[in-house]
Amino acid sequence: MIKVEGLTKKYAGITAVKDLNFTVEKGEIVGFLGPNGAGKSTTMRILSCYLSATSGTASVAGFDVASQSREVRSRVGYMPENVALYPEMRVQEYLEYRAALKGVRGRRNRQRVNAVKELCNLRDVDQKLIGALSKGYRQRVGLADALLHDPDLLILDEPTIGLDPNQIRQVRQLIKDLGKRHTILLSTHILSEVEMTCSRVLIIDRGRIAASDTPEALAGRVRTAGGIRAEIRAGAGDLEKALAALPGVRKAEVEEMPDGWQGCVLRTDAEHDPREAVARLAADRGWALRELGREQVNLERVFAEITQSEELR
Amino acid sequence: MNFFTLLNREIRAYFLSPVAWVVMFFFLLLTGFNFYAGVAALNRGPSEVTVVEAFFNTVFFWFGFVLIFPLITMRLFSEEYKMGTIEPLMTAPVRDSQVVLAKYGGALFFYIVLWLPSLLYFAVFTRVTSLEAAGAAGPFLGAYVMLLLIGMFYLAVGCLASALTRNQIVAAIMSFTVITLFFFTGLLNFFLLNVTPALRELTAYFSALEHMSEASRGFFDSRPVVFYLSLTIFVLFLTFHVFQSRRWRN
View 1 (cartoon, chains in turn blue, purple):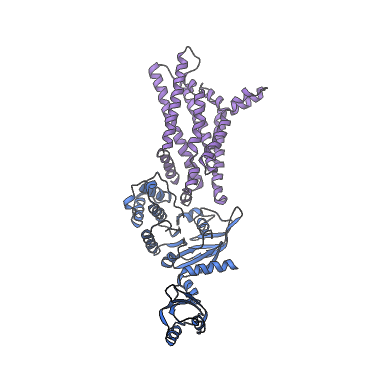
View 2: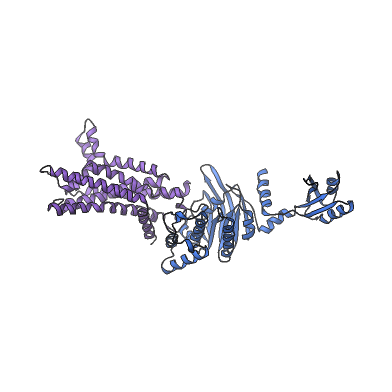
């Protein structure tokens, strides 16, 4: 659905995107992840034909974004990061206008406008002036706009930014549902969002792809070098040394807790799980043990690890 | 089809904004006063000019005239750049040329609407005084055709200025300067010391004051027609290219 080859974009001396390569297959929900200024928005703006690339090519559904821009635009539903709307128009009026611009006319115009209002919960506000809407509703109008022409590909730039937790949940559910019928490329820096909605993650850092995999595989990548957390009450002294001596433990960190217990974090090799050994150790020595488990691994860690190791290079 | 969708939205945008109504109100006030001044001048005694000629050749008309174009056009592109609505607009499958022409068309429509009430002045004049406002159809038609021609060019200049910047004030200042220079070229003769006949003739070619004065006396000259139409097309062409350049500029 999307094919990007050697894409580079420079703004007045600054390289926002550098020799970017990736593909997105039909039916995928791809999360575009990266720190601020990594080039996510720039890439999405090029794919939606708002900007042109400095060099390299990109195509959507087989059409080139530079030379066949109108074909691309009629197949892409794009929701920009800052949803900008005409404040003097009513929601209904705006959606009808946008649908007509995208070539949805006549009876189908009415049908599609009704359908997207239903999908995005805009029924109650369709006669309101856009200028009087709250941020959450505006985001939804932006999303509704992107869906009007039933596009093959949805490009959503931070679709849940500025929403309250309830709305975020609704929008995520909506994206999941939409993913059954559309290919979706969405950007975010909320990692849990990607874990919940996406079938694949592209991590972009300083204009280049730093990783591309399923959310699970990326999390697994860190889990293989993951950690064990334990809370133990031992006497003084040899806890750290004893833990470090267990097989498979590369490093043990012990920290005094305010209530007299000791919090331990063990870094392990991929093939060892020393939890059983820790329990036995505590039993043998007569130490009290109140917590023992794997460290929660989420994309947050993956992200930090990948983008920070990049920094060191 | 897209063109008409865009044009419709542009025209509605004018009449949904308070600025348009404020501009119309004050423009009517000014032209009304100008009309009154013309009639009052005729009342003082026998005169060689008709009321139509008087109306379109006074200082009141000139000032109101050069001021309205920046006011009408400054928001066209600048507002969309500033609000960011240009992004959804240009990611819809529309052509750049359609957008430029729709914006220009919307401004032209508003300009024409702005002048419609003035027809009423002359209708009232004829009814009250039982005199022909212009003496004949020629001057009347001539004055309004010239109004349209000059307007088309100045609106195009305003379009270009607005396409160049996201700041409406900057757009207004740019178009006001260019329009004023074009409009008052004819006055240059008064300020230069040694005006040769050749220079006088040259400035007359460019002088909107001259064009208006001729047309409102019923003279038809094809040169201003070609002048304004070709300049309009040229400036719209520039606007189109400036507008297109945004894809690689930012």
